[in-house]
Image 1 (cartoon, each protein chain N blue to C red):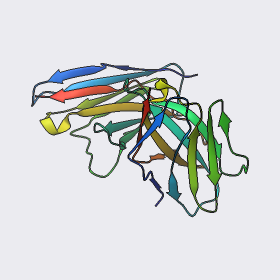
Image 2: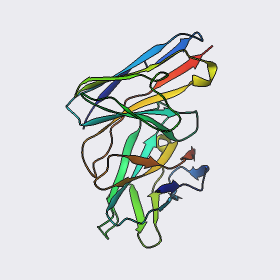
Image 3: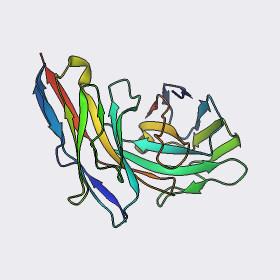
Length: 114
Length: 114
């Protein structure tokens, strides 16, 4: 069965600095998708970034980028120029192509220090 | 981007009573999901709801406790029945729009049972 592991329960970063959140997953499949979701205190889950496993190029969305290492089954999220509004829980998620389920990691709480 | 309207946003209920949570999607979707999230924890899938058929429940969740309705492709309800303090949690609905697509989420319902 596929699993998603986030080994950092909590991280802190100074405003304007860069932080990297880790995610590893376990799968024997080759066609899948990976996501990072942000959940602020408002509870609304918001998509941060999405990566197709068949693409070697790392996805980027403004200040957010990923380091996707397929062989190592690693999918880390880098947040550059951190802002106070980035403070939230961040969840890594795995979605196997052809199925409908999303498997979420345990989450990393990010604190941004002014 | 899609919108899922979930209500109520929060409620405080007496033990032994039931609460029905509603989710309205702004477009037709194949499947909807119901999750439970303990504070500071990850998402646990309760069940998957298809229109026109009975919901599929995950291990540890039963229909008598969490009856689900899916009367059409844009709407679903989750009822938490015969509540106890252990049911205090955040409940989230989400949708599935096809392989590789992001899942959209409702705003969540924070339930407190006293």
